[in-house]
Structure formats: C-alpha cells, structure tokens
Amino acid sequence: MGDNIYLPWIATITEVRPETPDTSTFVVAIDDSQLRESFTYLPGQFAELSIFGVGECPVGIASSPTWEGALEFCVRAVGTVTNAIHDLDVGDKLGVRGPLGNSWPTSEIEGKDLLFIGGGIGLPPLRSLIHYVLDNRERYGAVEIIYGARSPQDLVYKQELKQWEEQSDVDLYVTVDAGDGAWEGPVGFVPPFLREINPTPENKVAFTCGPPIMIKLVVEALEDMGYVDANIVTTLEMKMKCGVGKCGRCNIGDRYICRDGPVFSFEQLRQIPGALEA
Amino acid sequence: MGRKKIQKSDLSRWLDRIAQEHELIGPAEDDGVIRFQPVESSAEIAVEFGNSVIPPKSLFFPAAESLFSFHKRGKEIELEATEPLDRDRVVFGIRNCDVQSLSLLDHVFGQDLEDIYYQERRARTALIALACPTPPRSSCFCTTFGIDPLSSEGSDVLLTDVDDVYLVDVATEKGEGLVSLAEDLFPGLTDDDTRQLQPRPAEMKKVDISQLREKTEALWEDELWQKISLPCLGCGICTYVCPTCHCFDIVDVGSTLDGERYRCWDSCMYSDFALMASGENPRPTKRERIRNRYFHKFSTFASRHGTGHACVGCARCLVHCPGGVEITEVIKDILAKEGASG
Image (cartoon, rainbow over all chains, first blue to last red; front, top):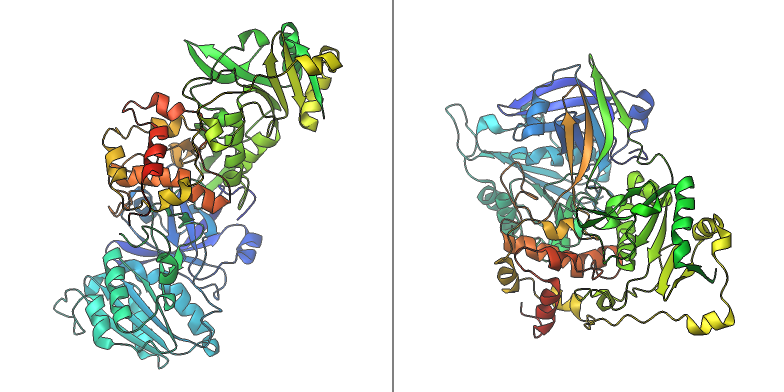
C-alpha cells in the first residue's frame, strides 16, 4: 500500500472465469508495471476492490503469492459492489487497495500435516494457502482437503478439484448438500462428512472457512476428534469499509478483523468476549 | 516556555493579527448554536460560551470529506487525491476536554497505517485553548476521566480568564510563534501578578472510575445493556456529538465516469452499521450496539491503544440524547454492579 491508505491502485482485468451461476474468478493485473512486480502479499490477506462511482468491498486474495504477476479474486454477486464487479469484462479496470489484514500462518505450520475444510465460497481464501503449500511442497506434510457446497453447480474451482483428485500428494473429499442427476459423489453437509472421514489430529493443523454455521459445527466436530483450539484456524468475515483499522466497523472485542485478522485461531477467539456468539 | 498575560481588551488585536497570517477558526454563533468555524475577524468569535454542539474533532476529521476524485476516459481511470488543507490554521477557544479527545484520536489516525488527511490537519493546525469558565457547566464531568479543564497539555497556548486579563501559558514552539506575532501585547508577569492572578480551581462532581474497565468487562452478558437500550432511539446523536467517536463510512459521490470518494461520519448505533451483504448482522439489536459502544468507551479503546478511557467527560451525549440516556448514569450503573455476573 502507498502512503495514502485510502488510494487504490488501478488494475486491469485479464481474465474472467465463471465458477458457479453467481460466482466468478476475476484475474487482475496492477497497471503500473513497477508496482505489479513489487506487489507482495501473504496467503490469507485480502484487498478492497473498487468500482469507482459504486464503492469498495473487501475480497480475499484467492491466488498464491508463489504465482507471479496476476491476482485472483473469487467474487459472488451478492451486494452492490460485487454485482458491479460482475458487470466487468476482460480489459476493464477497477481499483485494488491492499494487501490488507494478517495472513494464514505459513512458517509455524512447516512440517505439519494440513487439513483444509471449506464450504461454498469459503474455499477461495483457503486456496491461496493450499497452492502456497503445494508450491513449497517439501516444507509441509500431508494435505487433506474437505470441501462442500449446496449443489454440484455451486462447487468453485471445478478444474482444480479434478486436478487435486488426481494428485497423489493431496487427499480430496467433496460433498454437496443436495445432488443432481449427474452427481455420483457423497451427499450431505460438511460437518457430518468431516466426522465420517475422521482425520486424525496428530501433528495436524486444521484450516476452515465457510458460512458461520458450518464453521461452528466443523469446530465442534474437530474438538470431538481431539483437535486443540490452537490447531484450528479460521478466517472471519465482518462488514468492512476502511480495511485499515480506523472506521470502527469490523471489531470483535478490541480486535479489528480487517487489521488484526481476518485469520484467527480458535485459541485466540476464545479470549475475545463475544467472538464465538454468532 | 513560561507564563505571560494579555489584557482582555487586547485579545481581538492578537486574533486579528493571527487571522492575517493563518486561517483563524473559532467558536462563532449561528442561530444560537456555537460552532467552530473559520472567521474573517475576531469580531465573529464568541468568547463567552460553554462549548460547541459539534466537537472540534470535525476540524481534523470532518463530518464529510473528499478523499480523492476519479475520472474515467475510455477504459482509463485517473485518481487524484484531495488536498486536506490549503493553508495553516489556528483554532482559538478549544476546551481541554476536546484537546484530550484529539490526543485519543491521534492513536487511531496517527498510528499503525497513518491517515494522511487527519495527520496533515493536525500538523498544520495550532491550538489556542481557552480554560473552562469556573464554575463549569453543571453537566461537565471531565475530571472524572482525569482531565484538568485548566491544563495546557496538548494545546499550543492556553488562555485562562482571571479578572480583566487572560493568563497565557505558552506550551510549544508553535505557541511561541503565535505569541510572537504580537509580542507587545504579552507582558511577562510581575511578582505581584504571580501572587494575585490565580486561576480559580474548577469544582466538578467526580466519580472514582478506577474499577470502570474491569467492571465493564465483567458485564458482557449482563441485563444492563438491554435496560439501557430501551429508551434509545438509535438516532446516533451520541456518536455525532462525541469528540472521541471515530466511526466512518466510505461512499462514492457522482457517476462511474466522474466523481469523488468521500469519507463521512457513521454511527455504530445504526442497525445497518455492521450488516453484511449476506444478511448476517453481528450486532442485530440495540442491546448489542449499545454494549459495543460502551465497551469501546470503557474497555476496548483503552486495551487496543494503551490509553485511558475513550470518554473526555464533555457531556455532549447526555445533553443531546432525545431518549435521556446519560453516560454518567451508565457509569454509575456499571460501578454499582457487584463483582462479575457472567
């Protein structure tokens, strides 16, 4: 970020990949070539995307910092700004302000086995870390990914799911709440699916992102399986505006989700009054 | 830097001298309402006043301000940052509660990713504080929060009304500069002056708040917040008149081709303040919003920034609340609670 914390960089959309009927991946490149090359971020950080004249909204960076050049954002058309982003095509410009927030732990988890549990568009923020880990394969242990969505057509990153399915160093489990005629995989919600798979907590850190109710039930399941709070890590969502810990909106207790988060372990969250009420 | 004096009859000459060099801002009356606003000459300034309705934080963190403008030509988009100030400013008449609120806001805007708009206004503005009249207004309670209404801490110059002169405490180099604009008006104090010109101490009701933070923190689940929320209309006036509240919204004005991005005051008391596009709202009722506000004042601001409480006892919120919610009563209720209730 520059000296002016409110001033976005201008970036150009280089690719739009529809993921589901209401969600697409937008690949963007910062226009200023020097900036593009020096722009660094960590898995789990986010950016404020601007459609000038409409507004800004925070979106997790779904690409991995191990990739050069372009940033990827997976955006569901749900509010004014995200709908305006969906009106954009390749070659159109938008504002990018970031990177913002903290990140998934990357050095603390070296040598550990990793379990990723995502629901719906909770997979994109996890994807940044998954690719980071796969691109630094020797530093990390086994990778298990459990992913679920409402229906087969609501699964994001279908190409990558196929790839991970075939990849020998990734164990992928995918479920849907309700199947369709063509779906041959498991059917059911993520938390019971996780209990069924029952991954051992030994030498393992679990990362989860998804709808609040899924996170709540996933954490209950993980605790029943013997995971300790310090080894359960999530990324939180709150209404944000400034993204830099000033506008007073996204606090839980004395922590601003935009500045101190969005990534927290459950050990940290249990110490903040009200953090686990939602 | 020492104490001087100025005859009350000379004050306007000094202020007018300042107004020739800088933008002069002071308490001026508009339809019976005192506001801090730019003035052409000292004649517009109200010297006898309690305090302004809108706190002078608005001079540093305006109710609405442009951050930058955007211009789209074809596919290209150009952004131009808005300059927060075009000249140096001098604020006359600020009360010490409001000076102390700026010291608190400095922690928000001046640290950990600096806000250059606020910072530039702070750097280019001198503060001439005016010690509060004694006795102060009956609603004031700054001393409860450890603020001395007669202190020059945080201001560049402090004027204290004693008989037909103002005692002049010059606290900073900026303050020296202002006094030097009309050096002849500021004689040093004679021994007699030092003996005779004594500010009258401010007598104010004072509550012992040493337990306030821990008592507040023990009340997260308490029924108190529900009770306080009953008369609250959710109008947000407490936050608009609060000198330490700093919540804001960011909104675009204009079209997608040409326009400006504005930062505007917002209020944590509004139902949609934390409402997400998904429909989730972590503070869905007034109970949670009131609790969040008082926690911010008495617990989380202090724990986050390592400061005292985010209240300076100016009493604006309790004077203006249409529902009659009084922060002083809330403090008493919190302190009256016996131990942790869960």
